[in-house]
Image (cartoon, rainbow over all chains, first blue to last red; front, side):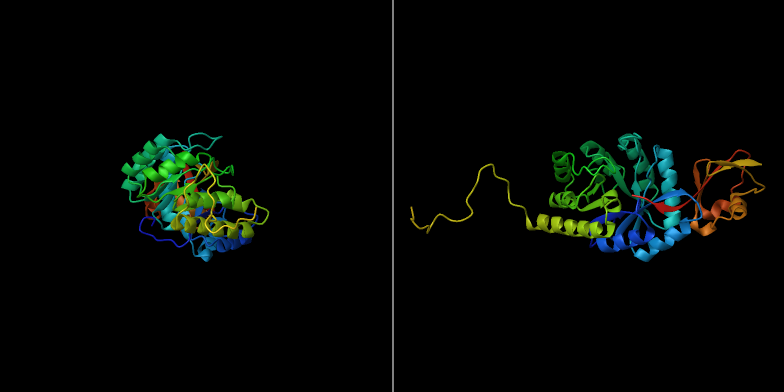
Length: 252
Length: 65
């Protein structure tokens, strides 16, 4: 449940870098995603066409503040997005460093506080730092989106222990792994760890066959979620025979 | 007067943000606007006076992740 909205699909898909609008459309459909992320950029007389394409998908729009490096930029962009897309949902990015695209946690918390007070439903792109997460919740966020790895890197979950601790610490908060996912197995791993959703873009858009890859990610997220719900077996350091010894024939 | 529109210096006779949107041929309902870094809602464009050197941003939906 994300801000009162129950989603069937736990995959959220970005819309950048696709070979064509048609491939983007088909990939969204193949993924089963119900939430897609979009940006705002200077009008080049193409915006209305893109908005038409988005409405054809029937998905819920999650606008983002990608590329914003300051609180003021992010807040203004969010307010512009709310008017343009008619939604209070905002994926809040306040980037701290141009090369690593690492979130600026201080700016993020400040921007989240302003936007939550202004009635936004904020999805903050954050690190896996527990204290930053707590501050974001204090600011009014009801969802947290820790990174798996740097944006666009495809490295998967770089700090699985930290993300496991994050999940355990925020047991009652919807959590989305955002950024760094490169393969369906990594999306499944996120869901197996109990995360509520996965948000990704490049791994689909930049694959050789984005539509097929989108479908694969949709299946991986479903499989990972089903596995979490079923309950994974505990790890053991030693082998344990699964076939019983009782009734074994003496043949030696 | 001279203003900056989406990063480019332009000459305009528009006195308000609403006039500028019309003058430049932007689809008024499909863009969001800001002047000098502050969001200007659609309904407030008519009353948003432009001053010499103002910096106007006109944004629209774009692919993003």
